[in-house]
Image 1 (tube, rainbow, N blue to C red):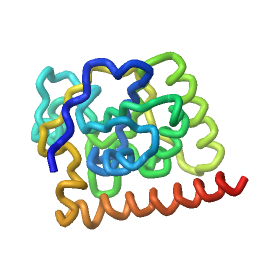
Image 2 (cartoon, rainbow, N blue to C red; image 1 turned 180 degrees about the vertical axis):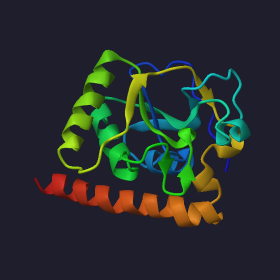
Image 3 (tube, rainbow, N blue to C red; image 1 turned 135 degrees about the vertical axis):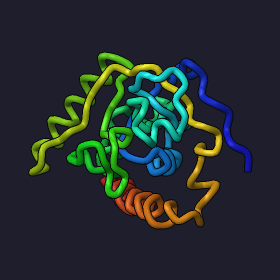
Image 4 (cartoon, rainbow, N blue to C red; image 1 turned 60 degrees about the vertical axis):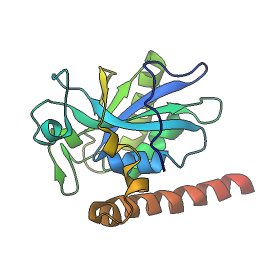
Length: 192
């Protein structure tokens, strides 16, 4: 199976970008690939100071970048709010600079917004979420900085490496939880 082409610098006509960081990008990418209305998903790095970050540098925390996914989506088929609802259901926005055993600023919870409207929606969703969690939310909402595509071997990682240990024990359970949660929501919506 071949890896998709890199995303362009701008989304295709009528589409938008969303850039989200919430732990390992392999987990986020695997979930968003399954969403109706998502045109493409790509793993990468954002929010740091190095002009040519590598995975090894980012993992050491040497560049200040977060592991992120850049999502190209069709807003006529899926809303930005829907993308954020998935985001907050598949990572823990109360863990500062970590997700589970993945520790470091590269795993921080961050929403990089591409417009004032995305900022408004992100702040709304976070305000609503605060009413349902007892711990402090640490998710940052920041303007989208320069984005760097991760190395080719990171693209579609879960799909390409389902038997790899991290994929079996970390990514697969998140994908399973997503499928169960959102399949139930789709059934409920269909019944309404």
